Image (cartoon, rainbow, N blue to C red):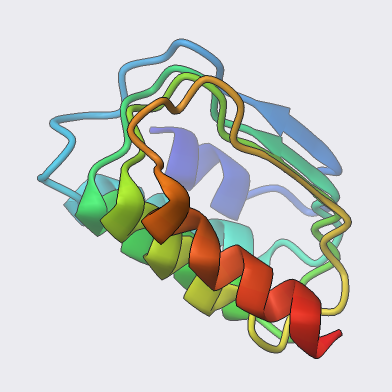
Length: 128
């Protein structure tokens, strides 16, 4: 329903916070993929907060597609408390390879991310 509502808007939305909302099973990503597709078409989105929605690898892959969107205006992505581990962190870091717009990605309280998962982000920082 949210995807349909956002898709039918005539104006872009700038800030979207869905903190603590259950967005489906963490490994079933069909609806989340649709949601990300709609956000990819929303040219004015600057802040997306998805704290405590429990992301899995499929949803991290969908978010990486959003981060790869060269037309995106997204500046801030808040992903606190999502049980993100090393694999998801690597997927997200891969989505940032050519991203020049995002200035804030908050991964606080994702205790499963170890030095291995942080390496992808460190490699990005070295390249910039």
